[in-house]
Amino acid sequence: MRLTKPSVAALAAAAVIATGSTTVAEGTAQAAQSYVIKIVTPGGPITAPQNAGLRTLTSQYERAHPNVKVQWELTNNSNVTAANATLETQAAAGDAYDVVFEQYTVLPGALPNGLLQDIKPYLEQPNPYVPGNKHWLDLISRSTLPYMTAPNGSISILLASDVETGMFYSKKAFAKAGITSVPTTWAAMMGDFAKLKNVGITPFIFADGSFCNPSWYERLVATSMLHNQIKSLDVDHAQTSSGLDVVVGIKKGIISMNNPSYAEVWKLLGQLVSYSYPGESTYDACSSPNATTPPLATLPLLVQGKVAVVWDGSWAFPQLNSLGFANQYGVFTEPPITKATTPLATGTVTTGLIGGPAGAGLWSITSEKADHTMTPQKTAVVMNFLAWLFEPANLGYWIKINGQGAWIPTEPTAPAAAVPGLKSILPTAPVPAGVDILPDGVLGSAASNASLRLIQEYVDGSLSYSSFSSAWQSLLISSANQFVQQNHVDLKKYL
Picture 1 (cartoon, rainbow, N blue to C red):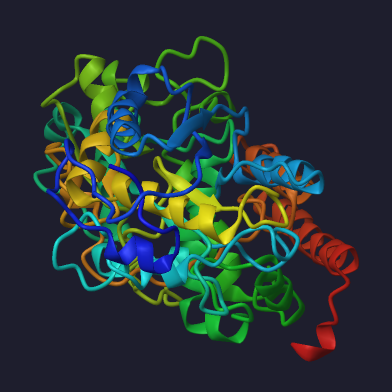
Picture 2: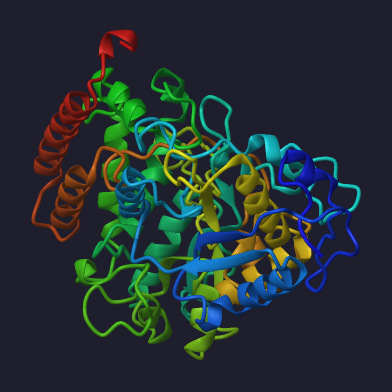
C-alpha cells in the first residue's frame, strides 16, 4: 500500500480500508517518489514511554507506505519563542523541519512572513481515514478552531490536545472548615478561604516562582475585568491578544493603572495573596512534583496538608494520583468575578480561557521557503500522515498515552481518558477572547521577566500596592514604546 498522487485531492480521495489504530488508507496508485518526513516530537525522544502510541502509529503508517519514512526530531525548545527562534535560524538555510512546534495562532510579527503554510485547503477536505466525513475541520472542537485560525482566516497550526486549569482542593480540609460545596463565584471562593483560615488551615498558594500562576491570573482576571472594553483594543482579531492589541490598549489608556477596571486586577491579587502560603517565589504550578530545587511544585503542599487549594492544570490529575492522593481531592473551575466582589465586575465566565490547546501535538507545516524539500507533493504526503494521527480513534489513543490521561483530544469524537473530575473543568460555552499583557511574553521576554519580578515583590510584601501600581504603569509604557520601535508600528492607524 502506498500513497496516492500527492495533492489535496490525494488527501481527500485515498480509499479507506478501515478505521482505528491498526489500518491505514490504501492509495489507488503508487507514488513515484520516496519521502522522509521530519517532524518534531511532542516532548522527549520518540523512544520515551509517553511517545509509545506515536511509535506504534508511525510503524503502522510506514508499513502501509513503504515509500514514506517518518523521522521524529527532538528539540530543546521549552517554549514557542525559543521554537520560533530555532525555526528562523534553520529557515535561513532552507533546512527547517517539515513539521515544527507552534502554540496557538501565529500572531502578526511572531515569525517572518512565508515560513509556515496555510493548511486550511487540506482541512477543508475529508480526512481520508474517517468514512463519510465532510471536512477534516468538522472533527475539531469549536472551542479549538479560534486558536488555530489567524486574523486573516488562514490556518497554519494544527492542534491535537487541550489542557485546562482548575483549583484542586483537599476534601479533608474543606470538610474541617465546614465547606460542603465548591464555590461558584470569586466572592464565594474568598469566603471559603476565610473559613479555612479561621480553622487554622492555609487556604491557598499563589506560586510565582515562574510564569504559570502569574500569567494565568493576568489572563483570567484582566479578560474578565476588561471584557466590555476589549473591542477597543482588538486590532488583530485573534483568540488571544497580540502585542499590537496590547500596545493599542496601553496607548488608549485601557490597559493602564489609571483605568479603574484594570487597576482592580491587581487590587484583587493583593486580596487573594493575603490567604497565600509564604515563600511563593520558591514554587511554580508547572514544576515537576519531584523537583528538589526551586521552583518547587505546589502539589506536594496539598498532599501534605500544608495548603487547602492549589491552582494547577489538568496534568495534576495523574500527578496527584501518583502521589497517593487519589480520591482525596476535588477540583473546581476558576470562578467568575461578580459584582459581589467589585462593582466593576463584568461577570464574564472564563472557563477554558487558561489552558486551551497546549497539550501535545501542536504542529505547523513549513513552506518551501523555510524547507527546500517541501514541495506541493511532499506537503500532501505530510498532511496524509497527520490525517492518520488525527483519525479520532488514533488521536485518542496516542494522546491518552502521551498525557497520561491529562490531555484532552481536540476532536470531541476521539476517546478521551476517563479521569474523574476532568470534565468538570472543561468549557461548556464559547471561550471569550483573552487578554495577555506582560507575564505571558506578549511584549517580549524582557518585559515578561520584569513583570514577574514586580509581581513577586508585590506578593511577598516588598512593594505596597501604590509602589507596585506606579512601577507597573511605567513598565507598561516603556514596554509598549519598545514594541513600537522594534516593530516599526505606525500607531496613527489605530489611535
